[in-house]
Length: 160
Length: 160
Image (cartoon, rainbow over all chains, first blue to last red; front, side, top):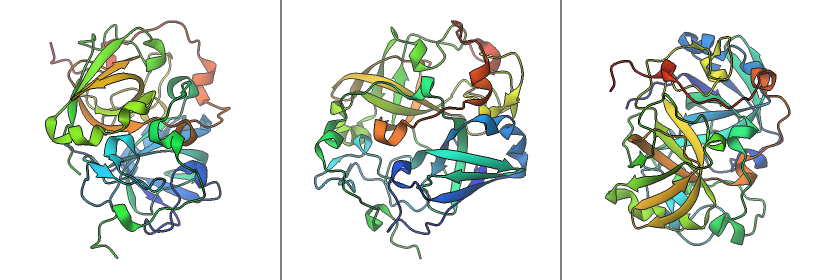
């Protein structure tokens, strides 16, 4: 199970500290996705979709931890009950808005991803497949959702 | 970028032919997720969430193709404009319903995943993070959504 990057995500965020957590907090954040040439043919007909899932590698994440205190809470939870990047397989997932495509470059908005992030996959975001009625969200339902940005707690300490 | 399975997904579907495509077509399909012991601590507090994202490896998928004719259409589209499994990085994504957790076993419903699938990650499905207003879904908006199940077109031909 080896991965090959199919492109690179470019954004205004060079490090975790100060970056938005999740696209819904990143309304004004624009970015681009550069798709490597062997994969450009796979973009055909993607432009008709409002939103796309980007599946990517958390390249600046610290080693995996099984219990973490997420940005929104003050107590620990299991890593799989959070969206923190310090995961056993550091795979990230964001639904971003697709503005347009120019040859091998995707213009995107609502970007919560650090610049230089290796892209692994793109999937169309289809409400019928992806949006379900959900009433219970565990610890997430019990915390305040004040404005918050990321800090360095899940980032490798050996990076510039 | 190497992946390590954190568990195995068990379902009623041994091969693609006849399997449901997407959880919304798999209402009555139950399954389990067996989490390997080094990762069980990461499940803490997951039980409070109605639905979870399973991120997994399409272990029976054929080699990547950049243009595919998906199950729902009769013409080709770029692989990234579809959810077909024959992807450059064969990573699957399904939002399944979490029924309960017994030690290292998750009981799940609305399962569209083949049995024996290696699990890579679990994330809580949080509407605020994952559900966005979407009005345009490209080719998907223009096809009929008749009852349909998968066939073997994206499956390796050397498998039982």
